Image (cartoon, rainbow, N blue to C red; front, top):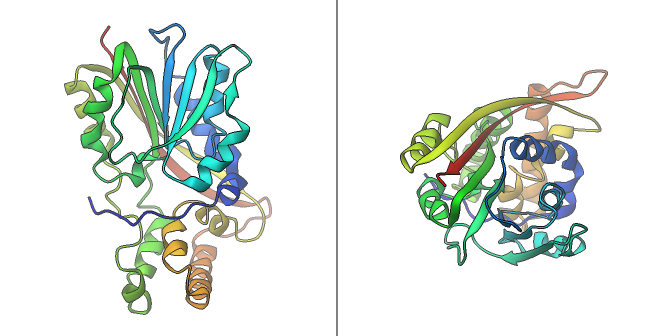
Length: 272
């Protein structure tokens, strides 16, 4: 798996589509059963601005929940969610790079929402995270599994074109950043977990001018925007070219623009 440079994140841009981004996390948590600890200890890996991490406290109100992220800008936005929770638990946040995060304690649930696709070699990290689970604990994550979708294919092709290859190199997240669902199932089952892996394609209805471009500015386009941050003219030219490609690939309808978005889910429960 090829490593992509760490992008600079924009919490405000990311949250512009918070409803669509949060829904898969709710669907993931719906398949997580009872946790062994009381009160539970929970880690959320790649917590971003913390808005979905806070939903963990709704499900497990007495839990001590820690969200981890490597973006200072994202962590700054988590402050509004941090502190004691209404159910008597606690929600806090800490800096961590998932490429080398080693759990320092035992957790009843380790979860991650749309973050592992940014972590090269994340498949090899799963055994260590499973080791940190209490008996009967759960590892649950979801990742976008749509690198074959036009928004990603067009982005990779444009970045690799003669006009941009010299400036961008391997900046764009590669097509192999997420594995086949059977790969995750096999790895988690061989680790001794009872595992459920599935995919869902969301027909996301976006509105506003160039909404698919606006969506990518919060995620897939971040590495390019970061790489060209010191060259506004080049940045704007790339964005304009990408915008035109997206307009053709995702035409606007009278009711909005449909962005089909496939996601991969995994819930692995450790034997008690």
